[in-house]
Amino acid sequence: MKAVEVRREELLRMIAALEAVVRMKVEPFAVEVGPLLERLRRIVEENRDAETLVLDAEALYRVSVVLALQQKSIVQSASSLFVDSQIVASKIVGSPPVALAGAFLLAWRPMVRLEHVSTPLLIRGYEHFLSLSTRAQPQSAPAPSEGPRAEWAFLEQKFEEELERVLSELRSRGGWVDYWSFISGAGSGGKARTAYLLSFLITRGDVEVRYNPLTGELKIRAAERREETEGDRVSLAVSVR
Amino acid sequence: MSEEQQDDVGPQAEAQETAEEVVGEQELTKMERKVAVAAALILTAGHRQPGVRGWELRRRLGKGYHRVLEVLDSRLKKLGLRLKVVYEDESQDPERARYYVVVSEPLVLSDLTTLGYSIDEVAILAATLAYLYASNDRRPYKEVVELLETKYPKWRVESVLERLIRRGYLVRTEDDQLVVGWRAKVEVDKKELLRAIASLGQVVSEQRTAQAESGITPREDQT
Picture 1 (cartoon, chains in turn blue, brown):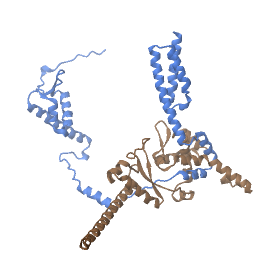
Picture 2 (tube, chains in turn purple, cyan):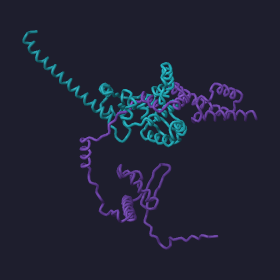
Picture 3 (cartoon, each protein chain N blue to C red):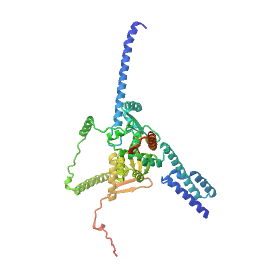
Picture 4 (cartoon, one colour):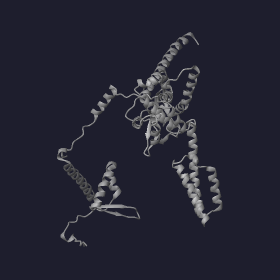
């Protein structure tokens, strides 16, 4: 039992070491893949229980990722002429700035680009500006000087009007109406808006919803108006200790 | 064939030649126009990153845009410029690649001051890029600053790095790593820079040997 526990810990340690490479915390060649695979094989041969096999598969997956990283590292090293970062650092420390700038100039080909506007471009822009229709200002909209409260009140009023419009349309249909056909009737542009407004009406209880889980049908209808009477009111007793 | 017939064929052949010339000129004009459009698209930069993608050029110039780019490149060479293709990934797909115009010959040190560059700024860029290239294109920002502090005060290093990041030569990631930026990929030849940096000490030692042999004392700025 103790041997199994030791092997499990060893596998977990291997996975953690490989994970460190995968997460770029350690250099890809810090892990020696050959001996690691040898050890993995021996562990699996000695113990073939489900947990060991799962951990072994996990370790093998990470080994494949580490191998891919090692290959990538070799390709990048080849493209950098196998010049080590320590060599570069020592060259930087040992060279005057002018020499560094001179070395850079050998490898630098600055990009050429133009940044200017031309008269034809400006004329086209102006023509486009003139072709734009003037934005209509709603007459009843409050002036900015009236403050944000007035603006909010105006927007709320507009929203209530829209809710009322949708509700009266649903009421005019009479009875249960298919939800999807109702919102599709508003056209492609208004579909989302009608669905949005309906969600408010449903939450407020102005619209009733009936869903048939067998057929998947979703029906809606305008709720009957209920007059609030004294009898509907209920008192709740709350005890405070 | 009778003489009369030959007389009839003569004007026809002339007309055909003239027509071919006109078509040839039209073709040339069409190509000229496309080259001008390609140059305008590649050279003109808006607010976003300069350079044009292959698919954008194909959309504007048609399927044969590679031929147009070849002609443009040959024209640019006469001006000391050239077309540079930077591929997005290892697939080397020309449609997704970006096309830029770069200077074809290296500049000299005196050009730097003429163009408004500071030698210190270029030296910091050279050192940073070489260090990043030798370290798989990324290093912790702090480590790069520490290396550059051997030459310049920290405030100077940080201000220059900030400027280089703004210009697109370097990128500082969220996990505080310094990475090679898009502009360095366009403008700097990685192998050439590493070769030049690696041979820096050799050049100095060769100069010293030559000076020692000729009996000339080296100046301070050459050491």
